Image (cartoon, rainbow, N blue to C red; front, side, top):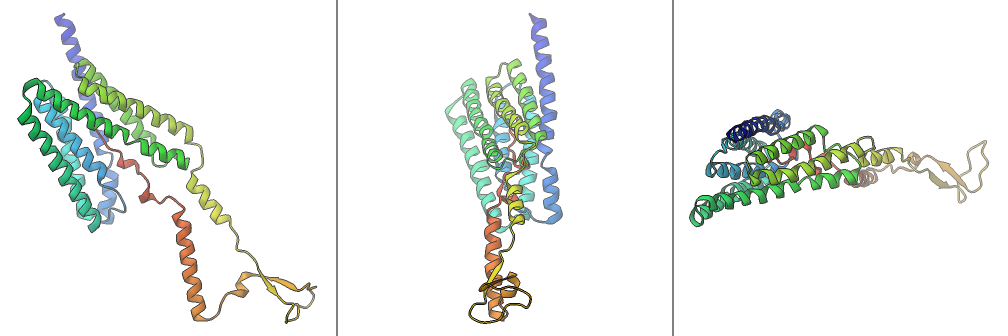
Length: 307
């Protein structure tokens, strides 16, 4: 019996180390994005919400690991995650425009400072011992489940656009692998607060990978719209010659003559300015039909939850 317990502890430690390694890789996955932000000195429409929420999740799991004995591996990876996410948020605040910076600061203060402080204060005052561990554990499970449901928006986007541009297979694969390893760790440690949310994360990760395989060879909806817009030809202008003006020599006129639309363009400065404004509004309307990159969910926006 003692040998079985030792072997179970060894396997749990092994899965915990593997979970730390893979989770660290997932935490570092947005580095190319923030290198681009640093190089261009602009956030370019990137959103800060995933990083603020990820920091909140790491802080909760750190608190849970402090309360529960034998959870050192949870403490290490979530401590590293807090540092990395804090650096991401600091860089975002440095290069974001004023409106986005103000929104990020409010979200950070409300979620990572206010809500986390309230949870910690209430659990410290109301509960004690194992009850406190269970209360904090269920709070962590609730937050993890809400975060794991977030990829549903990516799945909806893929189905609507018929494009997997914003759902790279590598990220989905590593999230599934991380969920499997942390589920095994929680099962071996008999910790339902770790095992349950990662089971749901595994299901959603597999669904994303299946969706990728289904749509990876299909043309994206945005490309189809662009091709349609590019293939559109300018209409020809019909010039009425029945009331005056002889037809061109060598042609047979039946009262109307076809000329290119360029012949009918206005020549005065005011008319040309009006046409330029109309063309600008039409171009803006055509662009609004497309999904711009900053309006879509980027792959580096995936919210990471390590448990």
